[in-house]
Length: 431
Image (tube, rainbow, N blue to C red; front, side, top):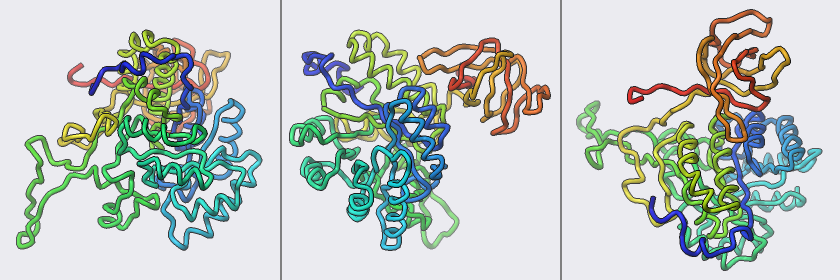
C-alpha cells in the first residue's frame, strides 16, 4: 500500500454529502450484462459487432443489444456502447450506418464511447439524443483536453491511465461540475500510452487501434543475433525473468476514499474479455466497498480483509496501484510469467430454480456428483453446497458434466436462486 488508506482530507469531509460514484462494469455478452446488473453495476459498457477496441470479444448483435438495454433500463441501470476505434476512411460509412441503427432502436444506449473526432462528428449528426463519452484512447491527460471535449458537447471524458490522483483532482478543479470524469480503477494495464500501440500491428498485422490487438506485451521475448539464426538468448532485465512488458493488474479496492476525494464520477472496471464469474466478483466487491465507505469509514476499514479476499478469488495477476500515486517502477511489472492466478473455476449461472429442488444452469466447466461447490450470491454471501444429482436436458442422470455450454438440471444440498453463480475452489500445492 503506497499510502494511508484514510488521507486527512478525506477524513475531514462530510462523507454523507459525497456524490455517490457510478460503478461501471464491462460485459462481453448478454449473459454477462445481466450478471453485472444483478451483482451491483450502476452501468454497463458493451461492444457491438464492429467499431470497438475488443474485436475478439463475443460482443453484441443488434438484437442482443436491444434486449440488454431493455433489461438494464428495467432495472434502472445504464448501458454505454463502445465505438472507440481510430477510424480509417473506409470505416466512416459503416460507422454512420451503425449509428443510424443505434438511433432507431426502441430503447437507445445511454451513451456512445468515442475516441476519434471524425466519429464524434458523425455521432453528433446522426444520434444527437445519445450522450457522448470520450474514450481513454483519446489520451485525455490534462484539463485543457477535458475542456475542449466539453465545448464540443461531450458529457463525460475517460481519463488516461497515466494520471495520478493529484492530477485528477486538479482536472476536477478546472472543469465544469456537469462534465463527468470516468477513471479505470481495476483491471489490466496497457503497456502503451492510453492504449495507443503499434506493436501488434508491426508483429502480426493486427491493429490494436482498430480492435484487433494480439497483446504482444504479454509475450516472452528472446534475442537472436543475425549471423546465428535459431540460436536464442534470453532477454532479462534481472534474474527474475524475461517478460519485459508484462504489467501487474490495477486494483484500487483499498483506496476508495482517495478516489472519491479526487472527484471521480465513474469508477470503471476493465475486462470486456472476462467471464461472468470475474464480472460478478469484481462488481460485488466494489459495490460493497463503495457503499460501506459512504455509510461509514469505520465499516469500510473493518471489511477490508473481506474485499481483498473476494478480489483475489477471481482470476487475476498480482496487483498494483498503477500511476495513481506516482509513476510506477519495476515492482509494477511481472517478470517471471504471463499467466493469471486462478483460485476458482467458473461452473455456470443459475437460470432458474424449480420446485422439484433442481436448478437449471448452462455449464461452463466440468464438475461431478459428490463435489462441493460454492453458490455465489449478489448480496455478498458464499454458500457451500454438495452436488447431489445432475440431469441432462432429456432428464437422463449423469455422474459428471464434461461438455461446455450444455444445459443441465442440478440438485444441490443448498438451493440457489436465479442469477446466482456456481463456482469451485481450486486446490493448490500450497493449500
